[in-house]
Length: 406
Ligand SMILES: CC(=O)SCCNC(=O)CCNC(=O)[C@H](O)C(C)(C)COP(=O)(O)OP(=O)(O)OC[C@H]1O[C@@H](n2cnc3c(N)ncnc32)[C@H](O)[C@@H]1OP(=O)(O)O
Image (cartoon, rainbow, N blue to C red; front, side, top):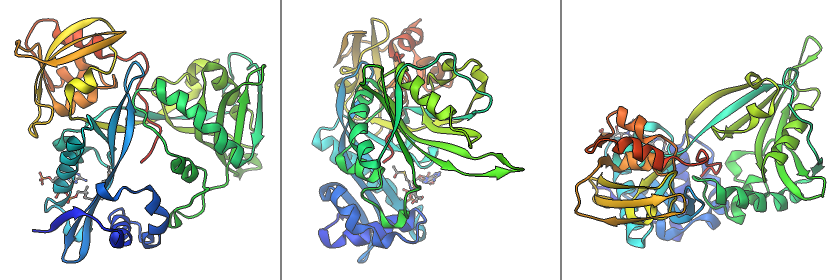
């Protein structure tokens, strides 16, 4: 049996080398020094074959925003790898289960991650909870419905670094599915701190949008691929980051992006599935959607703590039977919730619905309708109308969206 434990300071380098190898990055052995400040060694686990690290997992504390804007403490899991020579022997399973147990011990009510591949994490109780999509816009065809009011200016990287965090904070607290970012995250995001094996970041433009009163209403970063065919500019503007305080900022920044002569296409990934962009255009079909996929996955460990902290689309009560083979979320719970808050407590009343813990993760943020999961056989209805009621209650007033990769 391979030993599984937290790593020591001396093993930090070997941890990152093993992780990089697991992610098929042959150059990762020089990353440890830059990676070390973001690590919590008491929640950085490895499996050992003799003295060699052959599987990795680490987590860090964060906060998850729920529908209604409340946040709950969460454990963010990342760097899950097993070295190719040691796969399918249960090492990742042991690490994930070990980390979940430690998370529950610490009292974190939910664990989150971004799944490299869909089939990996459902067995541990995680469920896909948010989605995002990519827009591709032909800027020669797309026209905005309205003229924006305000200004957009180019700024340098350090100004962008100072401008984005407060905009993100506003976005985070109204966006179910988003998590907190540290200063270090922002430094990495702006290429101020660099992971050696990632290479140099592509040079980018930074812009800040202001309303007519001069208040900052948005900021964006984009790269440009300069390309010509038959003496025609056919390059692509790739939007890397955009946060706004609302529609005014969206309009200003999209007006800017669509006005970039010498590029043909604007591509924007990781956008919310209920984005305003198509509705800002004269012809919504010029915003072509693609790459709509799951993003953040959630694993509920403490049902009353998370279901009691979010708000619900309509007032209602439900008795939920949660099935969790690991036991953490297992039980029957009385939920009484509405647009202004909720209570959720263990109960012995008979259940309206039975749901597995993974499906519970998928309805937690309002990302997937209860009705859809019930139709797919993932939720059982025991009292007439319970699926319809739960569908209306769990719906969120905005699509959950997580823009933070970890
Ligand atoms: C949050 C994150 O960090 S996401 C990143 C995930 N890591 C990667 O994608 C890196 C490349 N992949 C790997 O390193 C490994 O394949 C891992 C970490 C995904 C799995 O590691 P292993 O030690 O092989 O997993 P383990 O042996 O515990 O397998 C558990 C089960 O999951 C299944 N499984 C694991 N990975 C996959 C996958 N990619 N696709 C489908 N099934 C998978 C296995 O088949 C096994 O099922 P079984 O018990 O029914 O046979």
